[in-house]
Amino acid sequence: MEFASVRIITDDLDRLVAFYERVLEVSAARPAPVFAEFRTATAALAIGSAATVAMLGERAPRPGSNSSAILEFLVSDVDAEFARLEAKLEDVVLPPTRMPWGNRSVLFRDPDGNLVNLFSRPAL
Image (cartoon, rainbow, N blue to C red):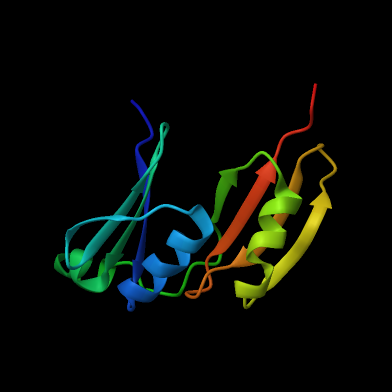
């Protein structure tokens, strides 16, 4: 089994896609009006409108209700990424900080309230 992707369900696909295009500095693939995807060498971040899960009825994920997952992106320079993005971020949860396990991280929320962590690992 191979981990392939995480999908965020949103009520405002265009807003969320534009946010992640700024953060990731890459354009999303848009194979359908209700779906977008950012592919990396190891996994993908997918963003879908609520229409993509409507068939699940009451058991469908609710946009903007995540409070337990963190989207994490490995970067080479946390401080440089934060400097690039800071003026565009509405909710910085933790400015660049050295974590007890050695990673350097900055945490912020996307427009739907999902927690995002840009981190770098300590040099060995």
